[in-house]
Each structure stands twice: as structure tokens, then as C-alpha cells.
Length: 294
Image 1 (cartoon, rainbow, N blue to C red):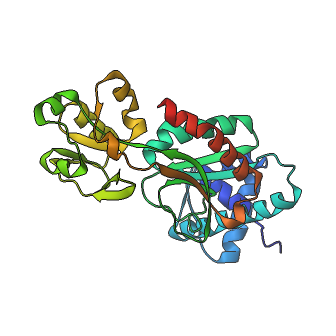
Image 2 (image 1 turned 45 degrees about the vertical axis):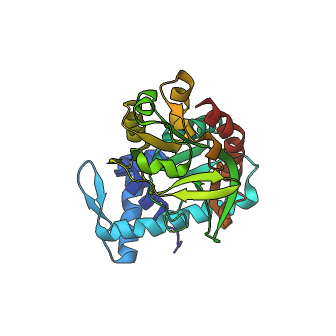
């Protein structure tokens, strides 16, 4: 018996939520999908779906099996693509990125990339948690800062700057800090990180601010700064439009931190696939310009 029998049909039905939608994806009949899944369940001696007249939902066993089956199908397709591909990006591409950067910068580039390559299907997960690329079967992640995982390949695609700033009305009321130590007497607006970074006389300085507001959202911190509630340190893409109009004023410019690298990160076994390398090249070309434009 073919060891792959029923697996493609099972994955298609699980992702589509119905046998009819899976049949449309695979270009076959609903009867073929139903019979293939039934034979697979018999081989496994386990029920994979709860069935209704319109939809199918995964059982607990089905959910566990789906994670493994998706990985098997992806690895099979990658093996075939590595020896038969003409260089055109194709197949399924799974990407993850932090929410804010993904929404503002990465998703628009990925959307243009997908439009250029109609044989490509893209899934993008925006999350601020650190995703395990190998365990969760992702092709590519966009990450910032220090990288330590030796199982992954990284390519620097851009850098992001940070700005310390506040509304002029706040600074007129509380005074303008001259050194990072002066922040001890200021109201600091804290985001998802508990440390701020500066560069003083060529040395990297880490400062742990205290403040009356802490929120794990850069947009919320930005709004508080615009309302004159205190000083913030945020990636420059949040604040650049307001620095240009004067709604925010930079502080501690002589102590600006070094730019933070932005990496394209991917599992070693996938770094030669056209769908990955072509997107990384596009990100390297377009992301720096997008960050500067704000």
C-alpha cells in the first residue's frame, strides 16, 4: 500500500474544514476525499474527524496527527522542489514576525511578493511570542536583536533605530534630561521591554527606567507620549512622523543607542529553496527604505 495514501487528502480536509472544499483544492471528487480519509483512519485505527453534513472538525488524535502530517507533506514537497525547481517560488510558505513590524512593514512586502508568484500560497502569523520554527514548521521568521540558536540560519536584512522622545509640553513642564541618569527624575513610559539602551562615549549603557505607565503595546506608549505623560524609548518607525511635525521632541540625542539588526531567520534545510531565498532578497531590498519612510 502507498505510504502516502490519504495523507494529502487528510491535510487538505483539515485545513479547509470540509471534504467538498478539500476536493476543490486537490481537483478531485468529494467521494475520493471521503474514501481516502476513511481508509487512512482504518490504517491508523483511529478517528481523525468529527463529521457533520457540512463540516468536519478534528478529533484530539486528528489534531496531533495533523502537525506531523503537515510536516511530512512540506518536507516531501521541499525535497522534490530542490531537484526539480526551475527557480520559481512555489508551494506553501509559512512566515512569522512580531505583530507591529509585521503589520506595518513585513506584510505589505510579503503581499507584493505573493502577487508576483501565483504558484505560491502564504501563511503569515504575527505574534510577539518566540516561535519554534522547526517544531511549528515555519519557513521563515523576521526577528530583531541578538541571535543565539545555532540550528537556524540568519541573514541581516535591515536595521532599526530607537528614539527617546517626549511631547514638548511635558519637557517644558519637567525639564529636558541631559544624560541617561537624569531619567531617574522623569516620568518614563514603559513598553514590553524593561530596559532602555544608550551609547555613552562608545560604550553600550543599559538603563532600567521606572515609570507610572507600563503597557505591552508600542502604539499605546506612543499615545501616552503624545498626550504629554512622559518620556518613551521606541523603535523610530513609531515616532518618526511625530518627530517630523514637532508633536514629539527627541531627547538624549548624544546618547542614542546603536541600531538594532533585523534578521531573516530560517531552518538550515530550507535556505536553498527559491520561495525563501527570493523573499529574503526582496526584504533586503525593500525593508530599509520602508523603515526610513516611516
